[in-house]
Amino acid sequence: DVKVTQSSRYLVKRTGEKVFLECVQDMDHENMFWYRQDPGLGLRLIYFSYDVKMKEKGDIPEGYSVSREKKERFSLILESASTNQTSMYLCASSIGRDPTHEQFFGPGTRLTVL
Amino acid sequence: DQQVKQNSPSLSVQEGRISILNCDYTNSMFDYFLWYKKYPAEGPTFLISISSIKDKNEDGRFTVFLNKSAKHLSLHIVPSQPGDSAVYFCAVTNAGKSTFGDGTTLTVKP
Image (tube, rainbow over all chains, first blue to last red; front, side):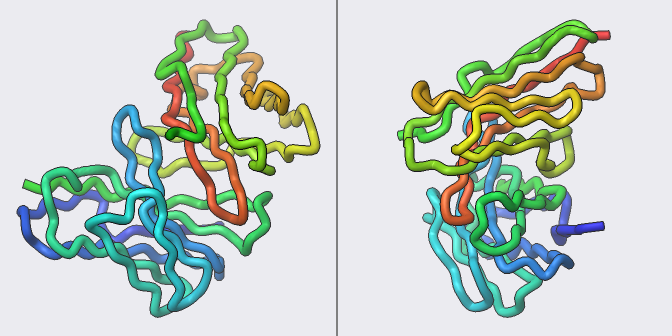
């Protein structure tokens, strides 16, 4: 059974803190993605990666960075958390560049920045 | 500029009736279209997809229709069941990257 896991389900941080969100997939997928989900805005792509050590900016990369040192792990970093980064963060993975392959999502991390 | 739009934030239907969820997109270069379903406190899960070379794909109670000239995608659920109550996202894919709509919350009443 395919699995994408995220390090925390709920996280509360203070403004200015450095925040790490971890995502691990056990399917040997090449692609990994980070989204945030906000009411009325759907899922918005923050960063994605097609391979180890590679990263690409999504639609809303400002205030975020990522790291992919191993194929199975993709980390999202908030260098200095701000209240407007309070959101649900979803990690996903998929196989290769074939668009017919769907993305598999983790359960999400609800981040609150105070 | 929103490339994928789901104009109905919510939809309520009676159990056993048809649910129709709609999605519009702007870029005619998109070549693959997917629907995902999301329950509260879970990540989205893949439901059904369609290639741009087709106009219909069916999987059990779920059928997706694609109207390329109108740049319109719809998901039909027949018959609707209370367990179908969830948020539904349409997504368009190009080169392995997906763009999602805002989502439609479907409520199926017993």
